[in-house]
Structures are given as C-alpha cells and as structure tokens.
Image (cartoon, rainbow, N blue to C red):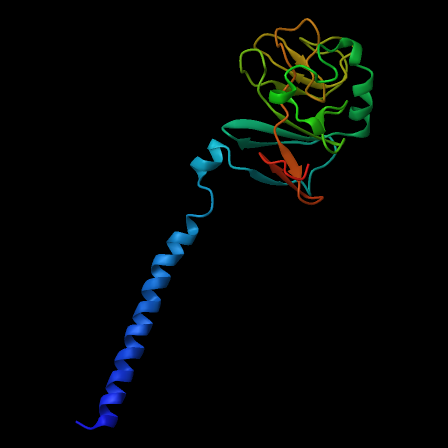
Length: 199
C-alpha cells in the first residue's frame, strides 16, 4: 500500500468520524438546551410569566396563571380610574398600608395600585378564605351590591367587595386588599408577572 492511498483512507476515516461526532453532539445538545427553558412545573412554582397586552381594549380583563394563582390584568377606562378617588372613605385600606411586604410592592402603593394607572395587575384570590371574586364592572344597583356601585369585584362566597384597584371595602369579611404580584413592563406591549427588577 502506498503512502498516498493510506493518507486518502485515513482522511476518509477522519471525515466520517468527525461527521458522526458532530451529529452525536447535536443530538445530545438540542435536548440539553431545551431544558434551559422553564418547564410548566417551574412556571407553576413561580417562574415569571410573560403577557402580551398590545390588543387589550379599555374595560377588558385577561387572566393568566402564575404560581398556580389567577392573575388578573385589567385595562381600566378613564371613568374607571376617576371612580377610584371617590371611594377612599368607603375602603378598609385605601392607601394599601396593611401588609405591604406581602400584598403591595412599593411601586403599587398608590391610589390606582399599579405602575401604569390604566393597568391593574392583581391576584384574583379573595383575602378572606381564598375564593375567586367575580367581575362586576357594570355600575349601579345590582344584586349583592350597593345602589351607588362604581364597578369592581364581588366575592360571591361571603360578599366581600373590592374596587377597580383591588382595594377591599369596609365592614366586609375580607381583611385585606387583593395582592398585587411583582410585575414589570419590558415594553409598552409586554408585561412580565413574577419579576420586578426594572419596576
């Protein structure tokens, strides 16, 4: 066998093993890289959830799940925002001073309880017994609501009522306002729930 033919067969063998090694590396790397994304289980345990709010209309509410809890995102109308100032005397904790560490981040300790006034981001679980309140955005007299109702949320289990900022009304079973989860806006159309580094 000549030296030249040995070099050709060695070269072919080297190329074949390199290709096989590259294919094997890709076969191992792709599943490995896919494990870097949070699983559904990790998301339920608290991984941040991204939400596109670009198509939300004024008066619309959307729900996403974070840590196994429903999180409401409400795009409030100017009328909804105007109603908030009129209610302070009727609310148990109008300034969100109770349990701020657990219920209201510093950037949401304001009248509208949010970073951007038109958007409410709140956990949809009543602070009384963990029921899920229902939306009652329509104003005026309705069953289980006062005649001067300005819109908000009603917990049908025991009658707790919350305004459009998630603040609980006085003399209701719920002891606290609805929780405002950590959140931040990464753009005008993207909201991250469960993280607030740039809030």
